Length: 511
Image: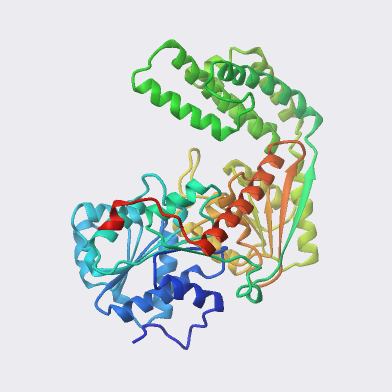
C-alpha cells in the first residue's frame, strides 16, 4: 500500500526513472538545484515502506533549514501521521530522542545528532530500511555521513542508501571517496539537455561582464606580488613546492604537510621558517585577491588587522617596507573614495534589469560579509529595494538567526523587495524562491559552489546568470577554473552512469 498522496503528486519522467533504479541499489543522484531531488527520495521511501511495512526511514541533511524542508515534504505528500514524522536536532534532549525513535516512522535529522546517538546506543539501525544522505558531496574525510553509512550498512536487515547532490566534485578521487563511503553501486546524473529532462527545464542565459582594474590599484598590486614572489621562490628553492606560482589550494596543502611534519618531531629551524613563509604566501595571496575582486577598502582593513596582530607571520610581513607602503597607498585611496568598479557596474546592471522587468527577482552572490553589506547599502542609496541574507555566525559582527533568515526569504518571496544580496549561505540549505537573474559579484573556483549558485535561477521561467569579472585577475582564473571542473565532473559521472562504478576492495562487501 502506497503512503503517497497520489492526487497531490505528479512525478516527472526523469524522477520516476531515477527512483526506479534507486529503489534497487545504493545510488548517488546528481541533479541541478531545483530539479526535485527531494521528490525522488520520497518515491524511493514509498517503495521501501511497501516492501518493508514495519521498517523506518531516515533522512539526513547537513543543516536544520534543509531538514525542515524534508519534513514539510513528507507531511504534505504522504498519509503518514504528522506525529510519526520527526525532525531531530541536537537541541532535542538525548533522553527524549530514544523514545522518539521508537514511535517515529520517518526520522529527519542532522548527521551529527545520529552519529552521537549511535555511539550512545540510543538508536537501533536494524529497524531502518532506507537512509537518504542529502548534500552527499559532504561525505568526505571524517564527516558524520561516512560513520552513519558504515553503521547502517552493518546493522540494518535490509539496507538501502540514496545520496543526493547537485555536484559531488571535479576529481575522480573525490567522487570515488563519496561512492566508497556511501557504498554506492550506481550513479544517476541528469543535465538540462537530457531527453527525459529537457521538457521540464527553462533555458538559462549566461553573460560575462568585464571591468578593468583601476590604475590606482596597480601599484599596490605590484608591491604585493613582489613580496609574495620572495616567499614563493624560497619555498620552491627549498623544495617545499614544485612551482614558482602555486595556486592557493596548493599552498594550503603544503602548509598542512609542513605543520604535520613539524608536530611529528621535525622541529628544526628550516621547518619553522617554512611554516612562516607558507603562512606569509597564503596571506599575501589573499591580500591580492581582496584588491582585485573587492577593492582597496577591504584590503586596507585586512592589512590593518595584520598590523595589529601579534602573530609572527604578520610581524615578519610588516617588516617589509613594501607592505608598509601598501598600507599608506590604501589609506590615500580610501580617503579619496575610489571604489572597485564592480560597485558602480552592479548598480547600473540592477537598475537596467528592473527597468526591463519591474517584478523581477534578482539575487547577488558575494563571498564576503562586508561586500554583502556594501552592495546592499549602495543599492539602497540608489533607491533600489534590497536586503541581505547572511549566515548565523561570522567572525566579526552579528549574523542572522535561522528565524531571521526565513523571515528575509519570506519577504523576498512576497516581493517586498527586489534584490537579495547574499553570502555563501544562499548556495546551500535554504529554500530560496525562484530567481529571474543571478549576479556573481566575484567568481568562485569551486565547481560545487558555482553549480549551486547557478541552480537558483530560472526554475519557472527563462533565467539569466551574469558574471562580473575583473580583467586579468583571479576573477578570470576562478571563472574558467569552475567551468572546466564542471565539464570534467559531468564527463566522469556520465561515464560512471554508463559503465558502472569500479569499486575498490572493501571488507564490508564481504560481510
